[in-house]
Length: 300
Image (cartoon, rainbow, N blue to C red; front, top):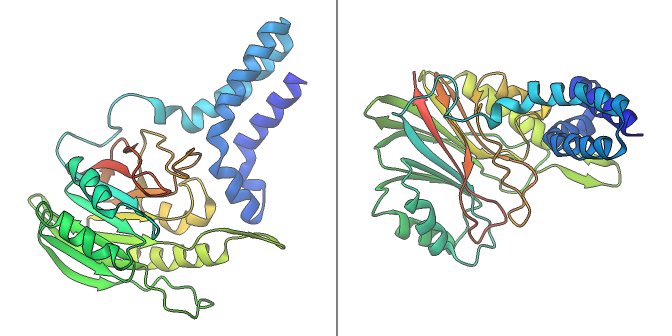
């Protein structure tokens, strides 16, 4: 039994893209959890003193190490350095009971840029007031916002609204941060969630929104780009291919961010072009159902 599960786990790790549709994307999001499964299976094989099972477990262990082992290595990751922009991404939740405390906690981490989603009145004014002393520059559009230590120019909305959504829906913005190391185009986005209904998993809205956001990034004229957002998918989810094919992601850190009570997946992302995203980590819980994530972005 242990050997059979080991072979199945290795197959999922190596050939998960063969699983079609939204289930395949959801499967990819939870593949890192196969690592703990391999550890448990190894313990069972040792207890049973089964050499065959232990031999079979080499394959999923090697496959997991190849796919995710680098995330556990020390340091900031390839291409990163000590100098760069520290960024925080946080879906603050439209039901957050303590927006002022959330704002103080994010500012205490000392980032250069703070991207927030699910900004709604009257909490928006609380965030604006609480963050203003440290972040005098801000851009807000709809329910997403960006706070910066550096001047912001070229602020404009980004249309990532899927056509089938008919109600007001403004979840994307773009601004240029004038940093000491050059201009950086910063995108803040909140993609639609993946729904589970009678017909199974439905990710078409999220995928269409990701495609529109990917097109906007591809057309960006500023060389350095940073994307911060709740993308409702992990970097392994093929629905985010329009973004991950154009932008680099963190090569260090797992940092599961959702749900905050028991995080199982990182759907809050930091991606970049002409820059390296260093180790991504979570910050302590706030009043949101997401954990904040923090990373250092080194411009090239």
